[in-house]
Image (cartoon, rainbow over all chains, first blue to last red; front, side):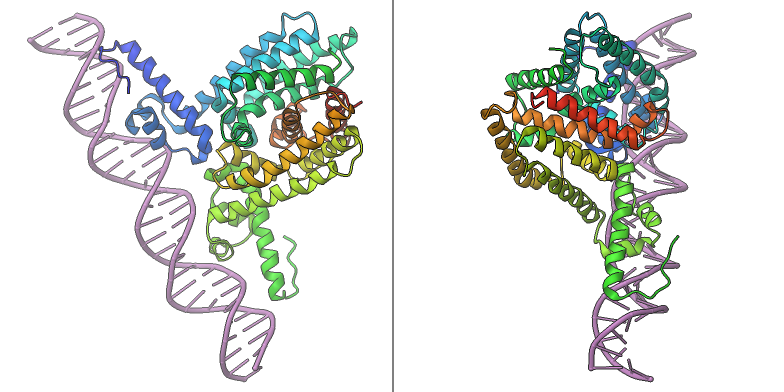
Length: 210
Length: 210
DNA sequence: CTTTGATCTGACCATACGGTCAGGAAAAGA
DNA sequence: TCTTTTCCTGACCGTATGGTCAGATCAAAG
C-alpha cells in the first residue's frame, strides 16, 4: 500500500521485513491457531513471497516461537506497574489498567499466548517453569505482605493473580464474543474506560482494598 | 481396553460409537485446535479406523460443530443454578460453583469453546447472536433487578458476567499453566475447593453481595 | 435359511502444506 | 569498475491430510 520509494539500507531492510513478518504472523496465528495457520497466508498478509519468510525464519515453529516470546515480554514489562506502589489499591489498580490496555492494543498476542497454553505450552514450557514461576512467587509474596500489614483482606494471593489474568485477558481473547454481545461493534473509548473501571472496582472491593 | 464381548444391538452400536468419537474428538480438538487436529489422530484415540469416522460424521467440520454444541448446552444447563435464587449471594454463588465444577469436569470442552471464539466463532456465530445474546440479556436484567432492590452494589451487569465467565473458565482453559505453577501436579480436591471459595469470596464481596 | 439394510474398512485420490534450492537482483565494500 | 555479500523468489519436492468408495461383515427381519 504505502511503499517507501527510497532505497533502504541493509540494516533497515532486515529490521523492516522481520517486523512485517512477525506482525503478519501474530495476526494469522491468532486467527487460525498454530495448526491452522499456513506460511502461505502469513506471506500474503505480509505482502511477501513465501520463500522470503524462510529466508528470515528457518521454520514455522521458529517464527511462532518469536511471536509468543514477544507477547510474554510485553506482559512482563507491564507487571512493573505493580511494583512501585505503596497500597494494594494503587499497585493492583495500576496492574489492571496496564493489562486492560494491553488487551486492547495487543489482542492477537494475547490470543496466541492463550492458544499456546491451552495446547499444553509445547513451545514455552520452560518460560512457565522459570520466569513465570519466579514472577508469580514474587508478586504473591508482595500481596501476602500487604495482607499481613492489614492493607487488604486475607485472600489467597495465587487465586487473586489468576483472577487478574483471567479477567483482563478475557477482553482480548474473547473480544469477538464481547463485540457480538455489543451489537456487533467493538467497544469504543468510553466503553473500554467503563470496562476497566468495572474490573478495578469489583476486584479492588473484592479484596478489601477500597 | 475394556471391550464388552457381548454382541451389541443396532441402536447401541450407533450410540456407543458416536459417543466414543465425540469424546475422542473433544480431546484432540482441545489439545491441537481445529487446524492442528487430524481425523487420523481422533480415530486412533477413539480406537476406530479413520474411514469409520466418516461413516458417522460427514466431515471434520461437522464433527467439530457437534463437539462445540455439546459444550454450549452443558453451560446453558448450568445457568439454571442462578435462576431459583432469592439473593445475589445465593444465585451468583451457585453459578460460580456450577461453572467451576464444569471447568474441572470438562476442561477440554471449555478449551474447544475458547478456541472457537478466539478464532472469530466461524462455526457458532449464530449461537452467539441468538441464544447467548438472549441469555445474557436475561441475566443482566436479573442482576439489575437485584441492584435496584438494593441487594448488591451498582455494578455493570454485563462486566460482572464477563468476570464470572473469565474467572471460572480460566481454571479449565489455563489448567496447564495453573498445574505448572502448582509444582507440575493438578489441583487436588482441597485445592479445587479452595479455588472455588476464593473466587466466590472475592466476587461476592466485590459486588457487595456479602 | 434367505434377504435386507446397516455397519465397517483397506486402499485409494486430489490437494495443500512446510520446506528446499538454484540462480537472479541489488547493495556494500575495495 | 569489479568483487563480495546479502537479499530475493519461482519452481520444485516429499509428505500428510480430508475425504471417497467398492466391497466385506454382520445383525435382524421375513
